[in-house]
Image (cartoon, rainbow, N blue to C red; front, top):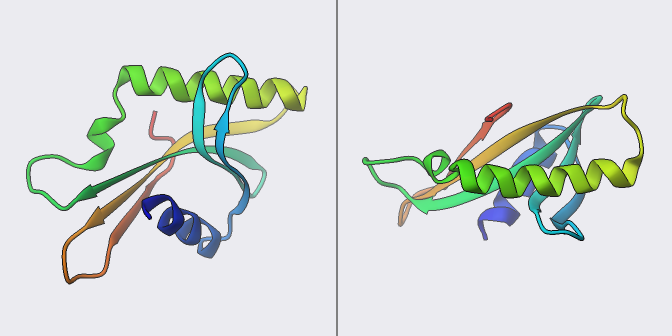
Length: 110
């Protein structure tokens, strides 16, 4: 559900969704691959119930970042284009019962 909300938000913000749930042949994963203007965006989506103690971005630790980086490298290898701008983004989806979800896009998150 969170990934669907994130895709809709990114699309509404003007991004073109290229692929969802990309898995590299040697491991690695990317929730959403999107184009934001001239920049390729590898997006991790984190969905959580709204809490005061931490935010969804905190769950994108070093181990998770390495997994996303491995997936992004696999995608870039498929393109065979060294001259492309790219970055890692995170979309936080925070849910509170009875309220509209809070969606935050963090560009260049790591």
